[in-house]
Image (tube, rainbow, N blue to C red; front, side, top):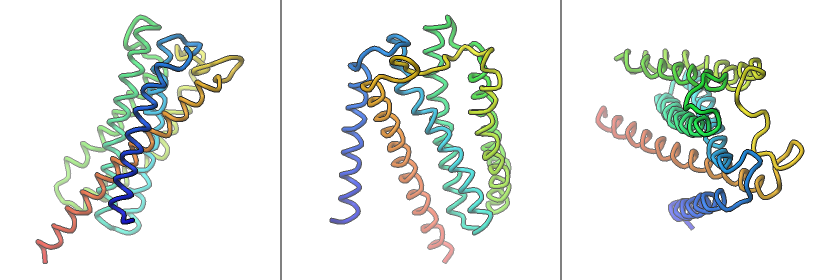
Amino acid sequence: MNWTRWSMIGKVVLGVWMAGVLVAAFLVEKPDLGQVGRIYFFHIPVAWVTVLSFLLSSLYGIRYLVKRQRLDDHRAANAATLGIVFCLLATVTGAIFARVTWGAFWNWDPRETTIFFLLLFYAAYFALRAAVADEERRATLAAAYNILGLVVVPLLVFVAPRMAELAGLHPNELLIGGQGGMSPPVRRVFLAALAGFTGVFVWVLDLANRTARLGEALADDEEA
């Protein structure tokens, strides 16, 4: 069986998996946070993929500085682009939860504030890329800036919100189904959603990277 057929099977499996997650998210028993807590089946997975995307982008940036391969610069930009997309999804789903539970879409909760700064950090990354015309210089400066993401992302996502946790509105425990833990049905759906959104990220990133690789091959042919 060739790679194309395996890839097609993988896409079908991923599509069925995500459809099952979507249905299960609304049929599983009600989380302790109430019906609005069901949004966490989507909010937390996209937030996880946001972190994965940005950290992977930083690693691609380091790889570019080491190997000086243009494709790694494209990979870094693709991962950062997906990071922005999933970060916006996390922000939107979080805002919906905030509107229902706290009465406003935005409350400058510590986690909301740090996600805002995270978006600004990567907006600056793309502004830097747009401001430099020379391809090699742009890739080098973007990669050097992107290394900061290895510090900024964990700091804004994990450290800073916990430092201000007592002043925050976010619940300390998510989708609780008892004393400090999810109930088994809720946990299964949550983990399935986590795996599914990660699979979607890997698939889309691979598609973007293959497109970039094709573009590089065409550019090399034109230069030759």
